[in-house]
Image 1: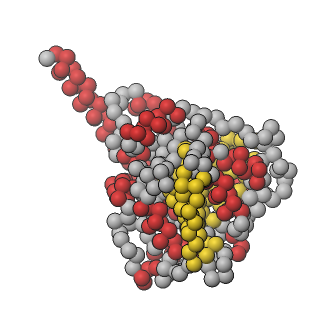
Image 2: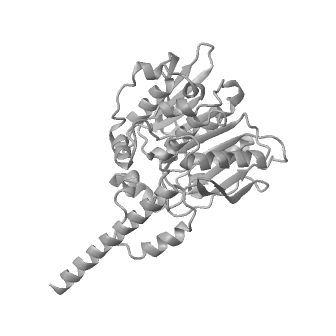
Length: 388
């Protein structure tokens, strides 16, 4: 009886600490969604008192038992090797009115002050910049192509699982929250390294994919194309509960009203490439189809479907062409693949070595696009907000 009583007291105390932790996080987040206090110190202090993880935040990155077994041993921190002795993988941080984020920046060996492209890569939950670089091997692909790669890194204080909080309204708007920090960070790198401003792109995995899509739509004057891997549509999502429901079931909003689809504007100007595994049990593959339908904005494209087998996975690639024959959108559905970066390095996390190499295919798609020919609207704020 004595031991049982002590166990009950410890469990109750743990619940109180967890509630207090969530209360503090929510309050501080309300005042500054990208608060720049020492989050690691804050988390370690309270973490020593915890008896369980935050059940709400962790719901964004719950894997089924098979995926947990496959990936849990790979969640160790992996420092990605630099693709060439003359290349560099730098560490820095950026601060603006919306907060502070650390980042890693890959500088290819061919860089000697000339204008080169830039790809912004947003990691998924339970990842950081180093792990994501290892998983995607984007540095190696970028080295061959002569391209910079920027990896912004989420802070634990914003989300205990290091997920990008795309499901919060403040992060679904231009010049607000995480989109404001990441877009301004991108501009800083462009200025610091004489980046080719017509060849700047953004991509991500899972929560990072959803955030990349939001940022790409919100800043069409900055990003020439968007890459989404295992992501989902922000439309109709306003909190973590609706985010979790959308992850599991797809969008609850249903078919978009014709009046909304005909609105046009910045949404239809930005090329998009989408990857998703049809056995993904974390983010329902239905989300990929919904995102593609939403991005078409009610316009008719000539569709070319190709079925192929690539390195152990069959896949279906659908190419959406405009009237002039230019490919505006690509969708890759990878058969038999789960919630993992296709063609990635399994020494990282959430990576599947089989299937088409998503990093290579994304960079191929990106580098054929220029911002200056996208006919973008440089003032998309109101249109972006109206589409939420």
